[in-house]
Amino acid sequence: MAGTRGTGRRERLRAETTAEIKGTALELMGSGGPDAITLRAIAREMGMTANAIYGYFATRDDLVTALIADVYTALADAVEAAWSAAPADDPAAGIRAWAHAFRGWALANSEGFRLIYGDPVPGYRAPEGGAAPDAAQRVCVGIAGLAAAAWPQAGSPGADDDFTWADFDPGLLGKVRPAFPGLPPAGVALALRIWGRLHGLVSLEVYGHLRAQTTSPDRLFGAELAQLVRSLGLAAG
Amino acid sequence: MAGTRGTGRRERLRAETTAEIKGTALELMGSGGPDAITLRAIAREMGMTANAIYGYFATRDDLVTALIADVYTALADAVEAAWSAAPADDPAAGIRAWAHAFRGWALANSEGFRLIYGDPVPGYRAPEGGAAPDAAQRVCVGIAGLAAAAWPQAGSPGADDDFTWADFDPGLLGKVRPAFPGLPPAGVALALRIWGRLHGLVSLEVYGHLRAQTTSPDRLFGAELAQLVRSLGLAAG
DNA sequence: TCAAAAACTTCACGCCGTATAGTTTTCGCA
DNA sequence: TGCGAAAACTATACGGCGTGAAGTTTTTGA
Image 1 (spheres, helix red, strand yellow):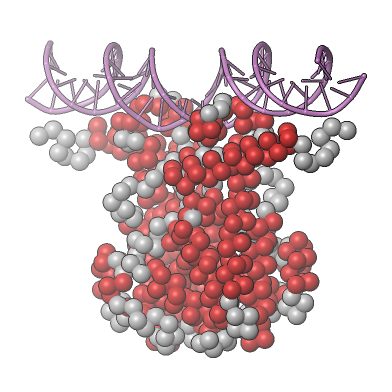
Image 2: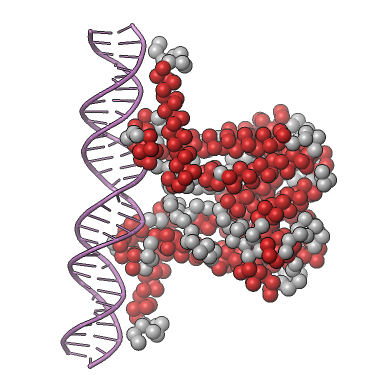
């Protein structure tokens, strides 16, 4: 049957155009904010008609969904790379590396951060199934890894003791439990709490709310991080 | 001179119409999300022409800015009321009351929360001067009050020791320092960190990212709160 | 009572997403 | 090599958006 082999010229061109559409969209987002992602602007930039894009994405929201997945993947790559570069036997250093990579990426790609964690684009509604992109879980699994590395020392905060596996998304657990067999439900709760804690200051900063109150958001983040590491029972590292 | 007295019929009608415009906008936001705030829809709802609104707000963004101020004020009222209702001699209870009021308001008014803390509405850019609404500072001052109440016990975390007054916005300090004379710069830093910590989980939840990972976001928030109170050196209360 | 000012409408422009229909290009197979 | 189908793309159109310019109605104070 035609088209079954994945290497036909047509398929290749199609993939290239798809990539160009997404790339142009990301460029526009970088230069004009998420609101600049319009089918017409993308088409204009590419020398096409806006309707031509409908051959690649059924709807503008589908395009945005694809962009979110791509950007989220970039974020996951960035934090995972930073974590891998940290000394494996030092949980505190791993957390610091992860957190600084997270904040650094968010500030350097603030449009992308808004795309992922905010209201992405005028009128966009996430697809119904709610299937968060894989990269979202990669990020969560990464934080679970931080929690797992610190767990021997962090196991006693006690606040998370009454969590059970039923409290968490099966899909998340499907990745977390095999990867970190020693981590109890309380450890997953701890991971999500760490996520929230890091997300809070970073999102306030990305959206400009923090800069209205302090001139040293980096110092503030560092202090929060130090307090986090200490609360996990990890030494100064 | 005409119009100097503030009670003329004309002024009153004008104020009423202004309020009706904002009220209609908030209704639309509640029923159709922030994207439903369009001049044309508001006008339609009020039986006017869209351009008539230009007599009250120079631009759509001006209207949104006014809405943000109003909604932010509602949030500030809510958390201040909850804090006032808590026993004055129990810092931990005050923090819990404040935090639960914050999360409760955010979940009950998620559109408003997005309006305040996210990208409010298609294409909206905050006004240049960056003058955050007064209510924003009211919220921050409120958290500073939480930190101040806990300060005798919380004073020793140490992570915030190298902050100085120069690290913070003068406007914020202008309200915080008179209100809480005993609070050092480290205490203000602590307040902003608490803000970020609470904001993180709540905003993940409001934007739906938390529900993709856990079925018990309320439990998670409670655990985070417990850990926060403990890290401040406050007893179980 | 009357002119000025305020409130409001009408019309227009250029954006946007997208549906429908028509046109051109490309491909696989006989 | 040529042909029919499929894919890629364009043209046109609709309704909705913010907003500017110009005109009309209502209200006001002297």
